[in-house]
Length: 72
Image 1: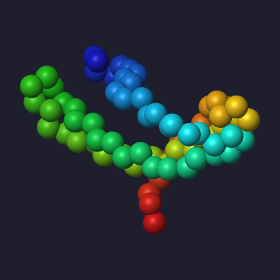
Image 2: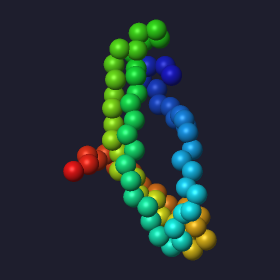
Image 3: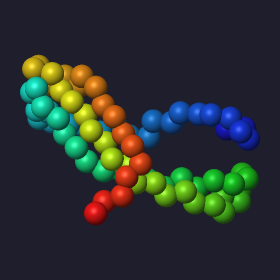
Image 4: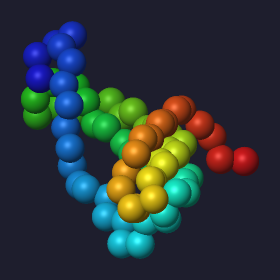
């Protein structure tokens, strides 16, 4: 990405084998991003995010939300 640009990157799909019907799942995602100039990735950004996803009566993803969070 060029400086000051925005981008989107999908690394891995999170597979949920038995999603709840008419229910929600809540969890945390932790990730780190290394950034800097090409060949000199000297900065790290580590983030922990709370994720909540809701499923409909068929077990299909209906909606989701995430926010910065710290586990207690």
